[in-house]
Amino acid sequence: MANQKMVRIDYRLIHGQIVAKWIKFRPVDRLIIADDELLNDEFMIDIYKMAAPGNDVDIVKVDDLEDALNSKDDNVMIIFKDVVNAKRAVDNGVELAELNVGAVQNNKERFSVTQGVALSKEEYESLTELKDKGLNVYIQPIPENDKLSLESIKNKIK
Image: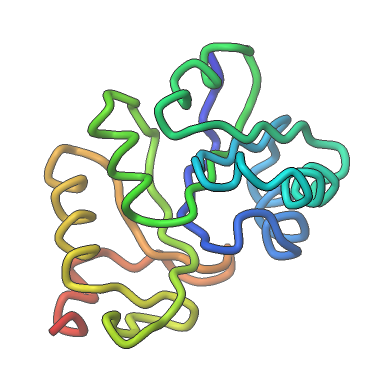
C-alpha cells in the first residue's frame, strides 16, 4: 500500500507550486488526482501527466482511490479538487493520513479565510466533521506558511 506523504485540496490540481514547492518539501514518487470529471478530458489528463516530470501521475475516480493506493508500494501525494471529493473519499472508507486545505477558489458563497483559501459554511462544516472523526485537517497554502487550524478560522465563516 502507498505511503501518503501529503493529502491536499487544491482546485488547480498539479501546478507550479505543487511541483516547485510541495514535492521538494515532501518528496513523492507518485501524484494521485482523485477527480471524476477530469477523467472525461483527455487533453487535460495529458497536461497534468506532463506537469510533474520525474513523478508518476495517476488520475482516478474518487470511488477508485483505495484501489490506486493499494496498487503500488510507493510515496504518494493525493490531490482533490474540492472539499466535496475529499469528504466523499473518507465517507467511502478511504483512510487519509491528513488533509491539507491548500487552495479553494473564492466565490460569492465562500468566505476568505487566508490568501488562496475561501470556504463556504457547508465546506467548513464538512471539514469540521472530518476533523471530529480524527483526521488532521489544516489550512496551509504553501510550505512556508504556518498551518492554520479550523478553530483559528472559525470566526471568518459567517
